[in-house]
Image 1: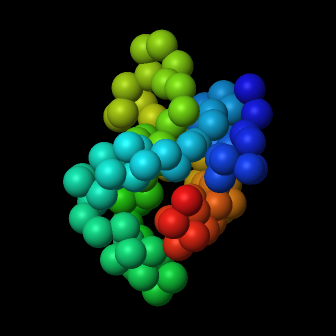
Image 2 (image 1 turned 90 degrees about the vertical axis):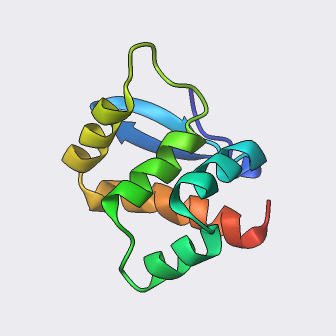
Length: 102
């Protein structure tokens, strides 16, 4: 499975598995219900104040497909174990899509 840049998708490796993040309208609405307004999230990210939990929540809701048996806790642990540097490219793509209004 690979990301489709035309759809605003991004790849994220978690625990050795490549996952596709797709910031669909419904995914972004679900993320916003959990973490609050997305533009405030973008502002916090730009200021270096985005929390790991917020980033994981955004990624979780934007997962195109969840591997069978993957729990939110295991997903969060995998993102944290992979490090912020590895998650940053995917975060940039999602933030770009939020700002572009796709």
